[in-house]
Each structure stands twice: as C-alpha cells, then as structure tokens.
Image (cartoon, rainbow, N blue to C red; front, side, top):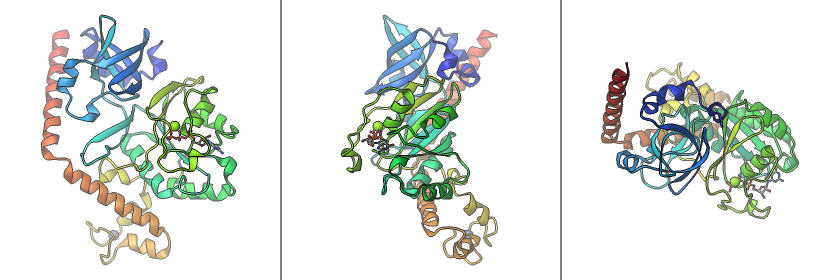
Length: 355
Ligand SMILES: Nc1nc2c(ncn2[C@@H]2O[C@H](COP(=O)(O)OP(=O)(O)OP(=O)(O)O)[C@@H](O)[C@H]2O)c(=O)[nH]1
Ligand SMILES: [Mg+2]
Ligand SMILES: [Zn+2]
C-alpha cells in the first residue's frame, strides 16, 4: 500500500525524519478498541499496541493514538509496537465525558468534518447542536460540511436548507438520503482523493448508513428503524476508517449525545462571526454583551439581526469554554511544555548527529 493513498504528506514526512533514522516505520491507525489498534502501512495491515515505553511517557488520554493518527512502528517478533504518535495536522476533539478536564480526540488528521443531521422531524436537526460541532471542527482545523440526511422523510426541504444556512453561512450543505441514495453520489464526489473525512453527529442520524452507501456495501451495522427514534441507543461503538473507491477515506464515529466543548473562546469567532463583527463597535473593549451600555451586539439583537437562541447559545458556549480554560491547570501546561522542550532537544541532537 502506498503511503500517499493513506493520506501521507510532507507534514508527516518532516515529522517522521528523526524516527526514520531510528528504524521505525510509519503507519496509519484505522481502528481502535481497548488499546488494540489496526494499522495500515506500506506492508499492508497490522495489529498493533503501544509499547511499554509509550505507556510510560504518555501523560494524557490525547497522547494515545486514535483513528486517523500516523504512528511510528517497531516490529518485534511479529508484533507491531507503536512507539510514537506523529503530531496531528488537525483533529476533531471534545472534552472527555465525566469530571476530568481532558481532551478526547475523536478523529485525527481529518480534512473535512461532516456534521450529520437527520431530517426525520425533531431533535435530530438541532441548530444549537450544529453550532457546537461547527466550533469544534474549526477549533481542530477541519473544514466543516453539513450533511442533512433522511431527506426522503423531509416535508420542507427549502426550510431545512435555510435553517442550515442560518447557522453554517456559506459552508457546503448536502441534502441526502442513505435510504434511497439521493445526493450521496455528489457528497462522495466532493471528497478529494487522499483526503480524510470524519462523520460525526448524534446517534441515529444515519452516519453508518451513509458510509455503507458511499462504500457500496454494508461495512457497518446500522440501527433498526424502530431504534432510530429511541433516545440513547448507540449502534456504532468503535470508530473506524474506511477507504472509498474514489481515493478518499471516511471515518465512522459513535453518536454522541452531547458534544462537550474543548479548546478556547477563539474557536467561536468563525462560527459566530456576525457577533464578533458587531462587537468591534461596542463602546467598551471588554464588553461581555450582557447589559453594558453601547453594546453593538445587543443592538443587533434588538434589530432582529441576530436570533435570541443563537445569541444565548453563544453566551453558553463562551462560558463553557472559559470555565474549561480555567480548569486546565497551569501544572498540566507546564508538564506539556517540558515534554515538548525535551522532545525538541532530542530532535535537535539527532539532527546534529546526522549532519
Ligand atoms: N428514512 C431514512 N432512514 C434512514 C436514513 N439513513 C439512515 N436511516 C435509518 O436510521 C437509523 C439509524 O441509522 P444508523 O446509520 O445506524 O445511525 P448512526 O448515526 O450510525 O447511529 P450511531 O451508530 O448510533 O451513532 C437506521 O434505522 C437507518 O436505517 C435515510 O436516509 N432515510
Ligand atoms: Mg453508526
Ligand atoms: Zn457588547
């Protein structure tokens, strides 16, 4: 298998240089379950696990490999050991569930994030939820794409499209049906060769059904029709990367009930651009847009240029991110910094030795 068909590029090549001279081999993680990984490399498919040294040096959950990651492998007695995760060119992350303040990387090195919704009338097409996905896609450096599935059940397409545009601006929107295949050809064709696309969204919107359609065969199990309107039913439990005939790669992910935010407030700027634009005209530089005199955002709200629900969602997300940031401890940040310093010291040393 050629590395370029797996998405290998200059960025990874550069970051792999010092590992290559240690005799390691690059591979891409296509499946992960309970610390066992399936990896594709030049030689084909391998089962892999992280090495003892990796375990020892890993500090955070996000240090571990995830689907889409490029890793450095050492083959020991027919077993592939993962010694390193290469720096990610992009990632779709969320805050891990529970009380811990930790990043969970859902998919790594993705070019596009397909935010999948279900037009089956009801909670599967939630604009406030989409705003959260949009912010997280951009925070992680992936291009968001909106996929409105189950269009076969939709009674007002025009309205759905308008609603999608009201939150997504000019990002691509696809109206599709995994059931009868409407629009799926166009969606598949929009993914360029060698690009990686992750499908994300709540449970039951049809992510796996769409991937099956794009693959032309049933590679993933889908929920039964009856389950699709039951809350909290999760059919896909592990993420997995698949290769489309056109050369793109798609990652199926388990549905999430709620996407908890990860990152910083800056991540909101593109998603709520009209708010940030208006904010430049607020009387106070540090205006919070919550009752200060001369607030241009509230003026926009009063004029009807900004929906109340959207404004409220912005305030909620901002508060969530600020709270998160305050909890990411200084200690953790220092730890990370020291490790990065150490790494760059080793890299420099190795580069010097090589010259
Ligand atoms: N009518 C209709 N039903 C669909 C369509 N796409 C998927 N479904 C149905 O919706 C249900 C859920 O589909 P899945 O593909 O399992 O949903 P999912 O998003 O992968 O769900 P999780 O794996 O739980 O996250 C199944 O019963 C599908 O048959 C569609 O375009 N139209
Ligand atoms: Mg699924
Ligand atoms: Zn203001």
